[in-house]
Length: 84
Image (tube, rainbow, N blue to C red; front, side, top):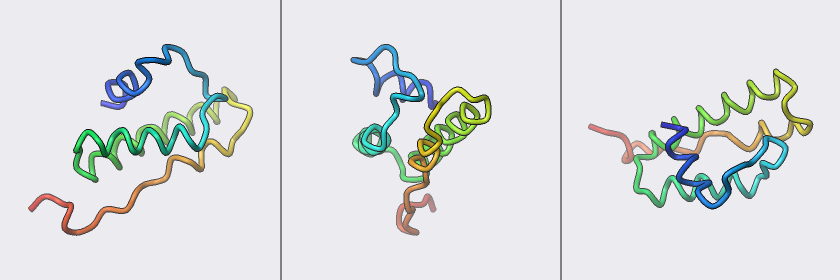
């Protein structure tokens, strides 16, 4: 699911490195996911998966700026946003 959403999000940017990730890109990705009318829990799951990928890249020394890992925190989910 993460790959599908990232591919769609980066359609005009075929190549991006971990070092090119910015807080603005993280914010834009969240906005992109929300604009797709995904449930907030789904947005959180996709962001959580992205955080796992970025953390794995940090552990493998694939990025030079470890602050990137902070930008992929969860968004809040209201009780009204959950499935009944």
